[in-house]
Length: 165
Image: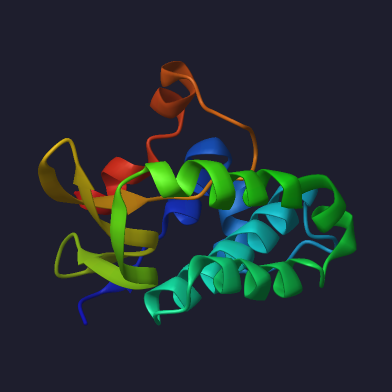
């Protein structure tokens, strides 16, 4: 594998505050408390990973939802506030998206950007889609910070273009 890894969080830390980058990625200091948004995102990603791994393995959606529910209940502070959103996604939105096959879940990759550097990244979900008479692949990046993002916000946090080069 080529070079030193440069992650999205490393680049963001460096661009926002060089001291933040130094503390986190040079001195490898960890915060005493995990920020709320990060903890919620970790919880949400784990619940979706459990659900889609079960679907990928051939488990019926209703049963996969039950498996995800058991996992989600491990963290009551998020379960009570956010399970209803995940349940709505599974019950209402997921069946209408045309996702016919889960190809990969929590897929870890590296993009060699030069002989000295590589960009490690994880794709949350890759699915085969059949929609409007066409077949294609979608890459999904789960977000648990808000219900939806405006084009302006997406422009401020262009994470996905880094994934696809």
